[in-house]
Length: 315
Image 1: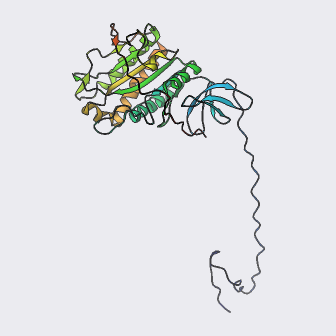
Image 2 (image 1 turned 60 degrees about the vertical axis):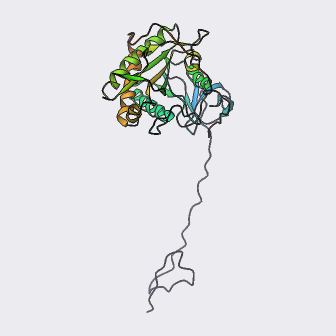
Image 3 (image 1 turned 135 degrees about the vertical axis):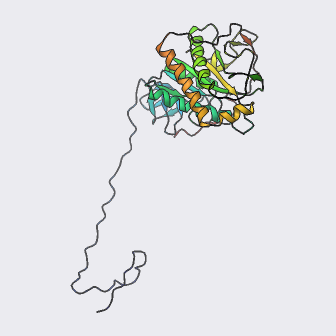
């Protein structure tokens, strides 16, 4: 009896191999046609105040129509989306400063503020979620979001607070402890109370690190006003909800930049932020670190606007 050669499908290009005695030709295999699938958009949520796009971008909702969500894009344009995860409420809006072509401060170790801010905010968000505190981020990746859109997210959601996280650039004088600064809304007790509690809890966490810190002479919880008496920073001035802006430390200080690049720092900063936020939501304490004399500062501008802004992909 002749031998039979075994071959794979791709190799068997000639005549059918001989059959062994008693073998029969098997019937052809019938491969069922793939089932038809239909893709339909999920039902719209009329109460949605913001949505998370399929690419993870958080967008304030201007209007919910029968056809979809009318949103504000990151670059403050009017957009339209059918798909998205609706958000009806969030007690906390976390704002990682800068992003995209606005890197913020850069340390001697090439650590960019925009990346550090996002790392701290993402870890803070995770801790808050574990504690049952709803939260949302103004940006979730490396793209630019103008100040007006960041504040619009918080105002649309009518959140309990907007917390904007930053790390500063000037090289200042040496200090025995962290030079953390919390800028608060002028004349707003809720903003002041939130700032005092975040300051107290954050500095408590950062004090564990034995490094050479730097600090401004009036560091702490402070109002920063321009020559016209208005809050200098847009992230403080624009929102109608209680808002604070944090400068957790100084990237221009090599010792701090080295620390900021470690997961230990990110964890400590995030715990401090989460502790301050949770205390604010739970108790009526005032915190500490208050400076009674406002700082006068006139920003030169150049960041936080819409000029040159490029929207990220939303779908």
